[in-house]
Image (cartoon, rainbow, N blue to C red; front, side, top):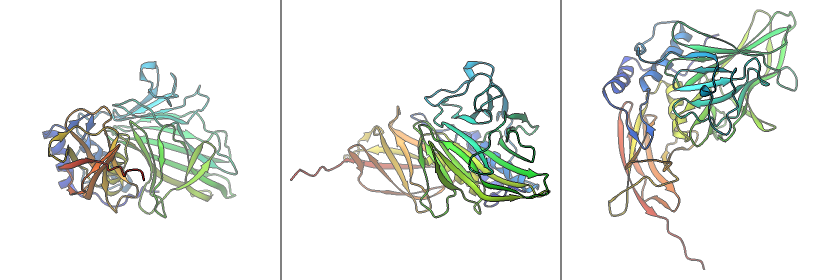
Length: 397
């Protein structure tokens, strides 16, 4: 079964513009928020997802030789373990990484083999996801997982594969594939049977405990993704194409992100379902929306650079604990960039999906005096100036 993505990529023009941006211009770095970090590599990674699915030629530019290969192996020393209150991995577990994102799986000696225990932005190192595991349910509960297998490919990708344990009548396995430069992991579950009797599964999905990240579910009738937003990193589980969706079922202390229910598998007709785990570079929804636009629509990112001024026009530092909001009817969840978390410098900058927005600010005791209309274009930084005024407190009667 092929992996179908929403639409074809836009061709060499967009890919070339992103490559030129990465090669010729220093990325903006304002207060620790990176703009266009690895944009060309991420674009190429998505191209190769699609090329591999379609089996045809690609309009992508070749991967840059300095983009690190994805690697996988058992953790041999504690210095490679993640940080954070939800970090659970230990020496002996399995690490899948490409220098942008890192995933840690319970190994052979783990009490939870095959479970995705920690997921981090490799530049920050903080884990804010408690756990994620494939749920293949023949009856009421999810079947147990076996210790992971893993390997690397000549194209620079690497993978971890987790099989359902102790099953003789059928085979079910999930592969996590990571490409060089990508911030998205392709997750593919395949179920097959050798029995002449049809195999019935009540549901297939991912059991997710969001940890310190806050679950965010779109308000749309069908869900293209669900997300979890932490303070340093954000996550999303995304349907692999626009014809697919996910559903959410509550479980004890976790969420079942369901990809199918009442599945029937017959001999010679394997069943497959693909989704993508996105790891966004900051604890906000704007990073999630940028990565999803790149993944589902082949839409290269632009960026905004926001300057704050007072009513008198004098420059202000980024207000602590506030949100720069990008208002757009195309967003299925509110888009925002958090400000004032150890930021330095007079502006805040971040990648954003291409499109037209009204931008404003809300924070502790302050707001923007007016929304600012902007258009973000792929490969371009759009400057924004927000005038910040104090909230008016109505006197008590």
